[in-house]
Image 1: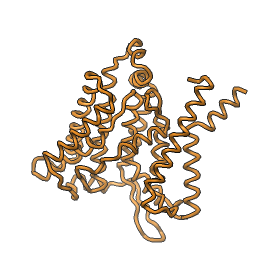
Image 2 (image 1 turned 180 degrees about the horizontal axis):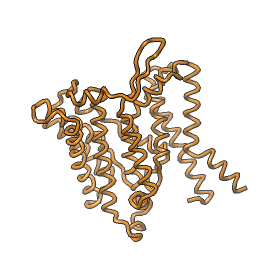
Image 3 (image 1 turned 90 degrees about the vertical axis):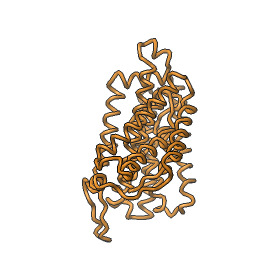
Image 4 (image 1 turned 180 degrees about the vertical axis):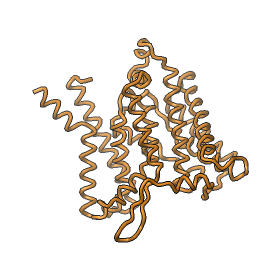
Length: 336
């Protein structure tokens, strides 16, 4: 009986439910539009998921540690705008290392600020990061203006041109390149998964997310771990923002604003709990895949653009409800 319960629990787990939903979505899309099964669709999904995946992994680490960060879109806007502003005002060199270095340095500063607000001043993480978001976005516009930069420096343009593969559609002749920057979220997921599962740092983040006092008694430095979580999120979000600028050929003061709710929802749908202590890279990947599928392929189902946000909301609501039901089932079975 116990084996049957484990099997049933596995087949109805949150990751499996997400896989079922994605399989049904893909089946319907393929029936409505056979072009969905083209390699071009996979390449487009990979390109569209680069930013979402990187942001989601960053946010996942913070959520697991018992916090939340809604400031990373604003920090990302500052991080991608300032290097472009410096370059266009002859105050920076044309180097990929310069652009990403400045961006990540900005992320480090804001990450430390979030860490101070949450760890030392004991502000609620939502309030602290909302304040940081307002300071970042408001300060950026006040100091540097709102000009949009739509041309890349030669070094970033060269990076944009480096592709792993290029698929040419035999029917249309269109080319679909897969940028080498797709390796960033791939390596990020692998590294974070290994850290969270096999290191004391990962165990410490889970511990403080589950119970800070118990983690402190067990010997974990809660303040240091919180700093690490927020600094990691801000630094990697800043690097991701520069990837966004490179691939989109655009840098504005508001380009990423509003993405925080979708990213947090993808983490929650993937199994993270806002109370902390729960979540995994694998589940977050599935959550991001579902979000990316829905956001980028609803037109293949004939759904008007005006309804796409509504449809995404329904999928997210469904995922959150299913995750909640799964958590209650596990609690009743005495697994946690």
